[in-house]
Amino acid sequence: MSFLDRLRRRVKTVTRPRVALPERNGPRVRQTHSGTEGALRERLAADPNDAVAFAELAEIVRRHAAAGHGPGAPSATTPEARAAGADDAVWALAEELAHSPRAWFPLVELARLSVADDIDGAVRRLSIATDRDPTGQALLEGLLVLREAGLNDAALALGTGHWRPAEHKPEVGRQMVMAALAAGRVGDAKRHRAALLSHPDASQASTLAADLEKQIAKAKPSKSFS
Image 1 (cartoon, one colour):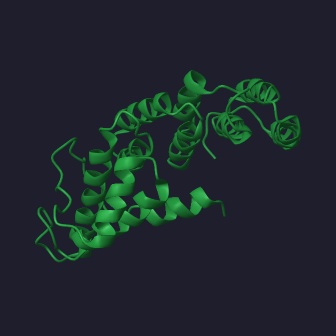
Image 2 (spheres, rainbow, N blue to C red):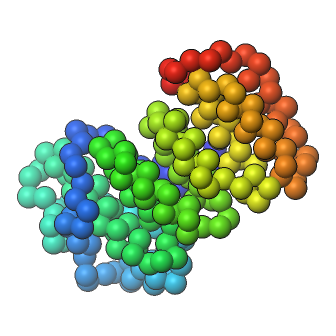
């Protein structure tokens, strides 16, 4: 399991009946902070894309909300209410950090929280995140968010507008090919595989391309998601 996979597990929302999340009306995170919380906030103020600091702070604000602490914490004691308050607290944290023009990771987390209820909004946030990140990491994360939600066509649309095969890491290209195959778009999968080979790390790109070629050969055009 990769570092980012482990990180996503740490900030993954609790499964619960989903309700529409407000744009800017969720409970505010606590304004009085412990030393650890304050230090994490300082790290995120300096770098809003510090994924480790975000995961650690998200755990703290989730615990506060689930325990009924802080402004806006739910008064109900049901597991669903506690999960809702925890999700909203993390939403508020990510939204607060996303206001920085340098921030892309918080936008990815907002998309992850909202994709079940607001696909268009989630895609919009991911598009902004990829625009803010020239490295392609935000794009990779965005593709994973959409693919995990079964939105392979949306993932392809996001990647088509932002993927730079010669600059972004080869894994972005692999996700593009896999999304195309999952969407039954074999022709697109072949084109994306060919584009992947333009990456300067020829060895890694060739290894991935060889594996993808085998998967493409087994694929049949279909509109069903895998």
